[in-house]
Amino acid sequence: MKSQGNENKKILYLLIIAAFLQLLLLYYFKYQNQNLSILNLNLENAGNLYNLIIYSVIIILLFISLINKKLKLNLRLLSSLLVVSYLFLIFGFISTKIRLPFNSIYIFGQFGNKLFTGLCYTFYQLLIFVLMFVLIFAFKKNQNKIFVKASVFSICLMIGFLFYSFFFIASRQERVKLQPLNNKTAYTVVVLGAAVWSDNKPSPILAARVDKAIDILKNYRVEHLYFTGSNAPGELSEAEVALNYLKSKNIPTDRIITESNTTSTTEQIQFIKNKISDEAKSNLIVISDAFHLVRIKEISKFHQLKIKTIASELELNFFSDIYNKLRESLALTVFWFFAI
Image 1 (cartoon, one colour):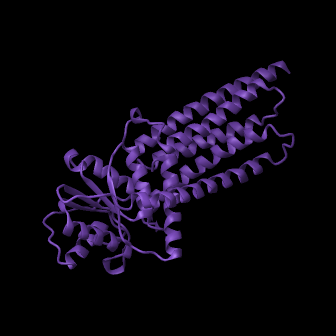
Image 2 (cartoon, helix red, strand yellow; image 1 turned 135 degrees about the vertical axis):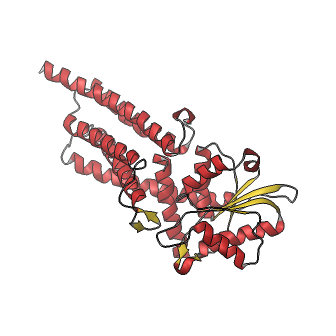
Image 3 (tube, helix red, strand yellow; image 1 turned 90 degrees about the vertical axis):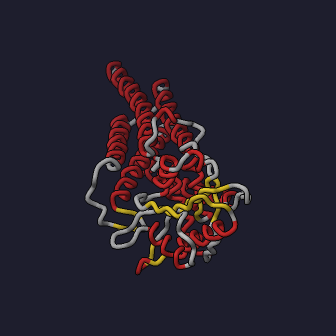
């Protein structure tokens, strides 16, 4: 009996060490996902803080389990959850570094490779939440169906984070809509890409972003105007479609630069950080939609990048507004937790 207790203690110590190392690995992967060094780690960033809180709860509960011998822990279940979560975390990271055969799939504006990465990270996070709730439920007398209960609570928690992200966006989008400009400063303007419709026509969202850029071109000094964004299969790039739309408005293109390689908002922020000069970044304006700009601000903070943001004047109906905010909520939550 005593030897069994010692064996259980060894397993708990290993779980504590493994959980702590997994947190460090997660931070390392997050910064690698943004082509940054782990030395840039900042716990004041919301996502990094959420990661720290979740793992702190897990590690504290494991320490309590060491002290409280009355707790009945399913160590095999805990070990399995942690091992499989490691696998999904590593698979998710590796999938961003190798060429996968899923890019012929294009769903909800995302290539198949990115969807695969997102699924790997999602299953990893679900398993970590399940691990946390299994430990919490170990304090209850009724241990029946503990895995099922932990799974249900974990899914509810993930949905809760989505709702939190939704209200985070809704409460902050007014702050990022319009930041004051003056006629004496020469600005660098970056228009982020958006969906292209059939026959290479700009979607209303993309057209509204370009319209706002045209308004700034006409009323303020603009050194350069960048259009960004890659393309879906069989389409012109978002940057090229934006340029063609601007030409149709009889606007001179001598100050226009197109960037057609970035496939996501995070890549576009990296483009701004790495390819635009420090002097230009000091007076940089990013144009997008109000619901999108909140996430842009969060990504910029992660990169320690200060930018001005201005929203397009696109007016969406109620259902389109909700749909776009929900998409942004999912994207913001994924960025907070995994920096992708």
